[in-house]
Image (cartoon, rainbow, N blue to C red; front, side, top):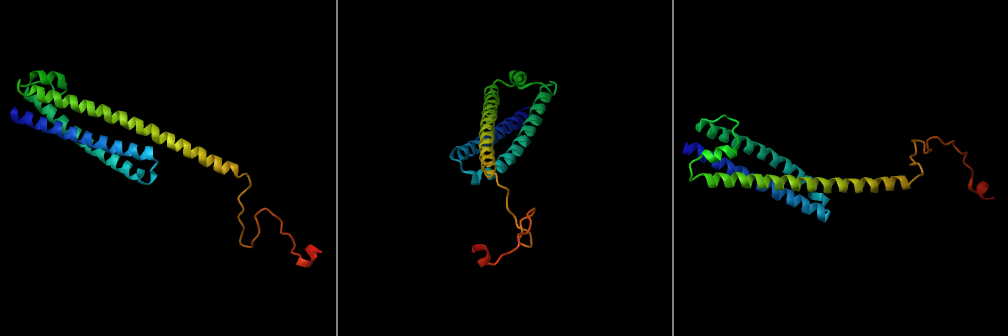
Length: 168
């Protein structure tokens, strides 16, 4: 039982570390958004997506370890942490309880920061869209593109006059 419990504790610590890493990445992204440093923003998105995959793996590992502890305590696989902690050896209850609470707290902070960044990104995109619409709508004249003969499409060819005919 103690070895199974140690594996759960290790998995909880690993998950906590990964949430901390995600929070740091989200904080950095938010800092870039506030400074309007768009050149590094795409890199942060890729890093956040990669960290999300690492978190999913660590959560899956933690869940496997939680089920192992539940089985060792002769409880159903779906037994929640609150019930399991009460059944653990007395010396382990505070540690496991604290790790579960810290994971929940960091998960909440990651979700909160993620929503904040999403709103900031959405606002940035909205402002850029307005800028682009204003830029393109302000130029109401059609874009002039000459064809291979040097004539604007849709315009009749004006006969060429000598300079002296046009002036005089």
